[in-house]
Structures are given as structure tokens and as C-alpha cells.
Image 1 (cartoon, rainbow, N blue to C red):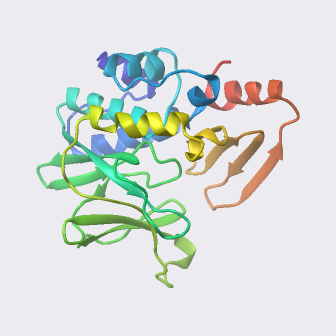
Image 2 (image 1 turned 180 degrees about the horizontal axis):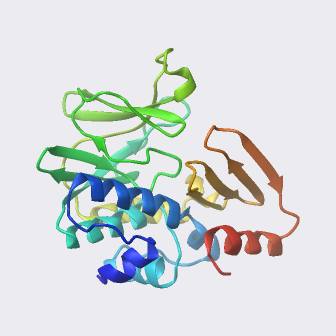
Length: 257
């Protein structure tokens, strides 16, 4: 792990003290600088869940990745900086309200002196700052959404609500998880599934997406370039060719063909 190179990739020049303020700044930098993307799947590139390979791809080759890659490598960085980090297995909520299988998503628990926090740089458009893992914590408004963690038995569920609907309290589930610490190798079978199965949404279309400095988002979904403002207003344009898509990847995400 070359910490200096990783922090340069994040365009981060701040404090390295392993506290909540640094953690929040690193998460926000990661979401802006390193895109959530599945381009390797559509380019026929194998995804290897091993720290050296992830560092080479994300830091040296200036690429992004999906949850196993982004959160897996971010956990390694945090440990080098002195944080105590656990890899957690999460089950993602589907449109039908059902949850996916175990190891469908990888998220992080970061343990500080004042408690544990949920951290995630690999779930696309999601919370921007660490969330207290204690379910009695107050909901947190972050950007266009409000987030909270609910607990039932040993299972916690991340929920979100559009900020403009905060008074309605119509929460939607994002994913559920427990606090059992996992190894990165535990996620390899589901990582292979998402790389190869026609039942995985990652094999169905190409996606590249990152947060913008103002709290909005920019995404390339197949040939659609989507800009979402910090207020939630969306504009879409259909790119005319594959060459235009490759130029958009370079211009907006720093990714070369």
C-alpha cells in the first residue's frame, strides 16, 4: 500500500489523524474522485480481489470499480492510516422489496473511540458521510436524501428518504447487514457471479458514475450521459457513438479506452 499515491489519487491533502473528521473527508474525496463503474466486465477484464491488483487498477491506472473493489481497497487504506475496519456482507433490496443473497454487497464498519460508523464508497448514489451504526442515532440529511439505520435483532437496515419528503417518513430500504467481520476472499463467489451471470444487473449495461463537487452526480449509463444537480434536477443526453462514449469517460471520469 502506497498511502501517498492513494491520497494523491483522491486529491486529498488534509489531516491523516485517524478520527471521524478525517474519515468523513476521505469518504467524500473518494466519492468525487473514484467512479463507481463496471467497465471491466464489459471489456472482458478479470476482476481480482487482491490488494495489489486493486491498487494497480484503481490508483495506478486511475480506474474505478464496484463495491468489492472500491470498499475492499478503501478498507486497506484506512487500516494503513490507523483505523480499525471490518468488512461487512450486505443484502441489497430489490424493487420488489425482497433482499438479495448474502455477499451481494460489501460495505465497511469503521470503529472509533466514540462508536462504530457505516462507511461505503461503492454503492453509487448513496450517503456521502459516515453514518453512526447505532440504530438510535438521529436520521442524517446528506445531499438530496435523508439516511437512517434501523435494527431488528442482529440485523441492521440502511434506509433512505428523499429530503423533500422528509415529513412523510416513507422510508425505502437500501440494504441490510449484520456486524460479523468478513475477509475479502469471502466475497469472491458473488464477485464472480456479478462478472459473468446474465442474472446480474452488472452484466446487462455499462455504468460509470461519481459524485460532483457540488453534491450532485454525473453518470454514463450505456450511451446516456446523465447530470443530476445537487437539488436533484436531471438532464440526459444520448451520445451519438461509441467514440463519444469513450470521450465522455475521459472527460468526466479520467478513464482512457
